[in-house]
Length: 431
Image (cartoon, rainbow, N blue to C red; front, top):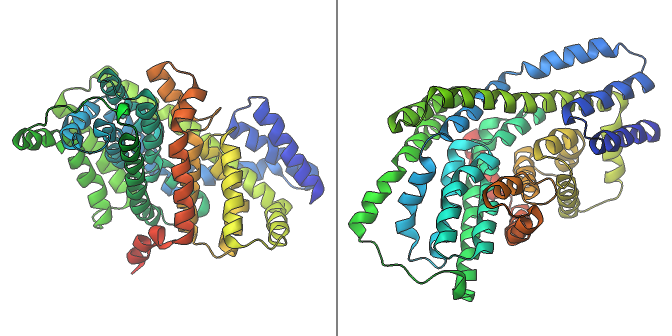
């Protein structure tokens, strides 16, 4: 095992440090490892693997959900979210800061992307909150933390990728993400309320209360996003549509919203299509490269050898999860979440299953760890999104977001101790 493992790890460090595209780097590592340690036609193996990986039926959902998010970026959903939610948060401790969390929670239910959720909600809320005198650290930090919910609350692009790579039900993964996503949002709101109660200077003077009638009218601003959630997730959860059909319904729904609001021009639609192609090309290359590397590693026997070596340590299942949490946090500092999932899953998933963890549960655990990676420097995509909105340094933004990262760590411990938080809904789906 030592020779192949040393070669793979060495090439991995060289390619990542050298700035090679992740997908190309992973593919090249697999090719070199097989050429050196196996006598086989690598070119035929590679061609067949690329074809089978890129034509998986489950991957059809990816471009559809991505296109849905791209179209929604050109609508007025961010303005609608702030206008509809702000009258109802004025009496809560922390007041309008909760709009960051509630807005991200709602938009995550129609987006699937953490970066898109952060950018869409933040372009309105940050300007409003900072302009009204809310504490900058709490406003920016809450947006960074809540924006990660775009990965956990379905429809989730990383969940689709995990489902394809791990060969588990994407619908069950979606179901598994609902309760943890809502609980995590409540924990974020609890922290905001606690900080505002602890230090009243973090929020400006209380604004005049809005009459209930006006607040109810403002609630109508949430109608477009409620329509989309019901349109997409309702059709999925009540069994009217498959995952792929629900994604197509989502694209149709986003077009209806954009046309109703008269915000989508031909230029905007062209930009949405190009953005979808770019994102899908990036994700597709990563998936193909990572799946090929995982199959090459399987031919070399590396996953089984590494798994047996770690099992020989005799770690308690909870200690194993703690080690994996630290591993993925460290990996998230140098690699994007999708790459981390597909690159390591052939080794870490068998370890988790052998320790008694449900593959669906482990998928949610992984999603939460890459959520943390979204707000840890130097490679935290949410940090770059907020940097574009605020012009602040990513390390300062990461410091603002640190309490929310700690909350996610605590929540990871909670779902480890009480796994039914994740698995109860998927089990009900199985009947």
